[in-house]
Image 1 (cartoon, one colour):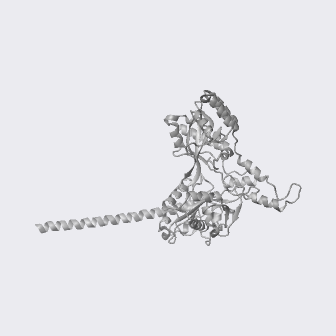
Image 2: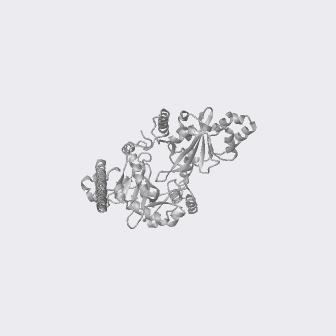
Length: 506
């Protein structure tokens, strides 16, 4: 079973039966999956390049300032860290790591890297507790944010942890666990003053509110009527309206007074202002997608939204993209794309890419990444940017490695438009591909064997690809034959000149 993957069919069936709809494993399942894969690494049977998936951070971790992004650990990095001379450990002692990280003893800000968090866990190696160093990293050509565990080792110096406390780096702690940890630590027992000082810091520390506690406050905010049924005075309602504009989620996105996402609709991409991209201040709902695009990615007519924090992230990640560029990319890739697909069907099953290929007027390919999640009320845009030709090839190969394809999108006016009942249909019609279609230019060879698109399946697409490869091979053979012929002809001419010279000299 693959982490984070549940079929759409199963989910719809669960929803119809009134069951909870979940498209990712719960912590128990994630933990079991990790333990199984860890044993494979111990046995030497784990595939090369494997990445452990540890799920999303718990509310505890989020309250400590860790972003709600998938947590990952490279198997190769784990191996390297376990063999590091100053922190050698047995990876078998990391069993149940997902549980341990999500329910830690404490979470600290890193003393040396401001973008990192240090998680003190209950897992031990020879009496020393493991710490995990976590930070947000970019992954892959699409620059997707993840929480990456960059370091993991048993902390053998508890004095170091006291220094973190003394420097005010503590962001969350389980007070009982951390108090017991200090009391039982031999380093601190040797100096009773240090132990007492550390215990006092823990005792006086106030944990941040969990996200659910913040939402409970928002949801309990006064309605427009008092509890006795009397309507609120206008001045009170104005005060509440003013207050509601300041309510935000833990990512800084504006919320309504009832805790739902506050969005402002635009009727055209041109209505997005420069300020939206340079000084984000609102969540925006975009115009609805064309039906053929909506059907292709399975959006089910949900509103398309860009959150305020996504505007901010895109500004930081793609500083070369101006507000004018952003409007151009969003307009082209969302409403007139050439290609679509799941570039990470296994590891990011909700993510879909829409791509508008460059033409004579525009010299850049444009890409928008969207999260299409049946459990959410919106289709959320993740990011947008220009993409190089080489990066497009990488995206295609990445999709194929995870059992998917980057597909050509039918035009709105074609017979097939709107006729994509599932997210995996819409490939090339086998009987509509001609030799002219195979004689494509640039990305035509890599992605789209243009022709009209029908309801063909994957076999048809692969057959066409084989025909294209054979045609290219034949052309290369013709070129090679011609080169040999020219070389032979030239050699014959040279030989004839040589013998004539010899005859003349005689």
